Length: 178
Image (cartoon, rainbow, N blue to C red; front, top):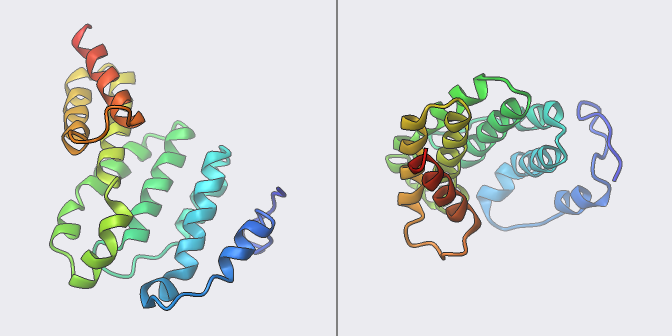
């Protein structure tokens, strides 16, 4: 896969996103948010390749259209992860800010609820797990345990083999034996 500049609009990922750009859908939400979806996918690919600055720029191209906009919230998480990879402490504050927006999803517009459920159902526990790891690295066991409890509450009925649940339980056990 070739890598090039985002700003020039040059293909970053060869034919993979070219195919996505041509996807047709009758879902009016997808049609309206096609570019946001593409930026989200590109940002995730760049983040996985540890190209954090480029990933953050890609996520930053996603605009917030309404309260509890799922693409915007996921983009903010991507930016936060990029910042954390670059050892930037603003990533922690950004994640805490996203958790503060839970009420928007619960009390959001009907169209938002219809579209956000499957899109962000893992957003809250993922962020809690990331924050727990940050607090654990900073030796703040109280905050780490609080965030682990939060994500384990979400995952209480998950399969025992679910990798993130297993990681959260392992970290919780580590704190318990410190």
